[in-house]
Image 1 (cartoon, rainbow, N blue to C red):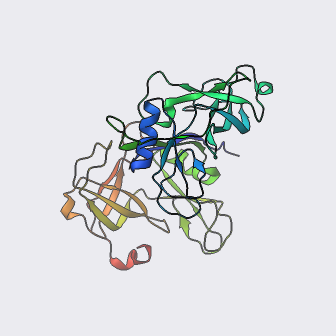
Image 2: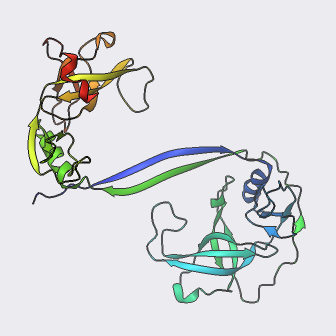
Image 3: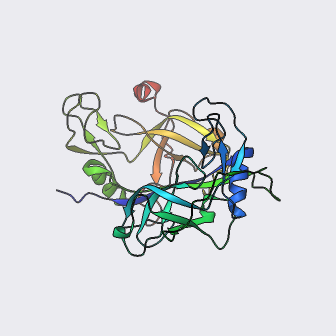
Length: 317
């Protein structure tokens, strides 16, 4: 059996949102070493504050300042921190009900003595980051507080006004994972590295899938028979791209199309070049162009053959 390929993959994009008056005050307050909550309609103090009452869904604006010490309500140990987490060494994720608050805040607890030192009900306090920008990370983490640390009383009203308030938040959404294409596509990718294109034929309907899927989606049976297709093919449909993509070194306008390789039962997509963009057409016969060391065609160019008749590719549109 062929070795199955795997590769690390990252999906990442920055997400920017504007902040209303409540979240703006909360994040700006963290920058100024102040923790704010909001009073709900039933009198409960919600931290972190929400813009709308969690029970009535009415807008709420009554900001209050709560304490910087609190009580752990529940926790879980993180023995193997990942990239981007608050601490690089093992720590506990904790829900902390700050003094004066009625809800709990999720954050990290620095517990250098290990999980045996963490208990529900233990007293903790905020450890502020050295540099603060108006984000939840302005609280670097929580740390154990002395057992005799007094409880702060009821929260005090706060106007929520600060100099140079934070008005927007940029969150870097990121997903790290390991991708495996499976046995069928591993064979396909290995063939591409040799400048060949392989599909798989369904034993019942005889359709050749490129790229192969390992099974026929119509018949529901395995597709084990390897079939080499192409290299030439026919443009079935296409579009002209007029917006330059970030990080893609291709000048606009350019053409991206669906190409039915000879012998394939469906079309794959690829860039079409070597011809003015406004001369690309359905039925155009093309062939792959490979770059040195490339694992897939860089683009497809015209072969110079006459255009294919519509009836030869109409079922592949």
